Amino acid sequence: MNILQKIIADKRREITLRRERVSLREMEKRATETPAPADFLAALKSVPIGLIAEVKRRSPSAGIIRTPFDPAKIARSYERGGAQALSVLMDGPYFGGGETDFKAVRNAVKLPMLYKEFVIDPWQVAHARVIGASALLLIVAALPRKTLADLYKLVVATGLTPLVEVHDQRELSVAKSLGAICIGVNNRNLKTFETKLETTFRLASQMPRGGCLVSESGIRTAENVVRLKEAGAQAVLVGEHLLRKRVLARAVKTLMGEAWAVS
Picture 1 (cartoon, helix red, strand yellow):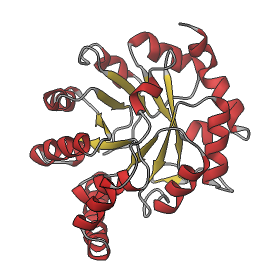
Picture 2 (spheres, helix red, strand yellow):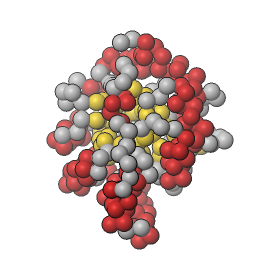
Picture 3 (cartoon, rainbow, N blue to C red):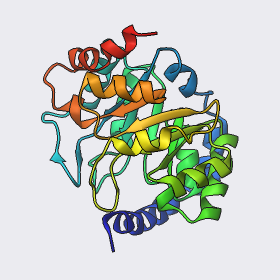
Picture 4 (cartoon, one colour):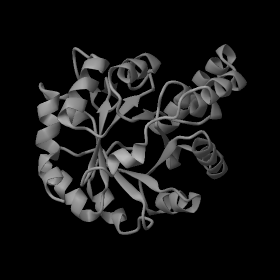
């Protein structure tokens, strides 16, 4: 069993318990009573290349990333630096995230937010809307084809933007078959955790016309961002690189400034 399979198995147990505490019907009712979220795609397309800045305490590959860890303070710093959207980790056991962090960020800033989670169940879709997400991650490698298709339709119907994550050409074909317009290319192999920016460069030319390509993981320099923009990326998702910097707002401007300056 690889790390992704283990995470998904644990996630199934977690969601079973959460549905026992708050039923799917109740969560869906709450979702219908929640105001419409900010437009995730419009925010990303408002600049030459958008930044989804990530709020992440730790990861299986990197361990603890930032201490002290104050989600609200981090979010405000990202916003001051000019980030277009924020990604907040929802998984607790492996990434140290969760609803408390998400709500802290939601209360601190007005930026669109990505519900960064291993989504396997309709309960999570309704939950994302209830706590103020604008977008939700769907990982092709984590889901059977029919489940992925059903969740994709549900996310759209719930008023959220599905960010469909792929790692290779086969998964990209699956994303395109869904009609996905916001596709994330994860440069990190979730089975081996090896990271290569070439994954985005290889898949960029195969993106659907009019879609939004988001390059994820392994982005560490302004040169990386410029190259990804030139390859066709409309946004980048960056966490660890920024979180290891002392002054986050400055780190955002240093990473993105050159690409933002070029129309």
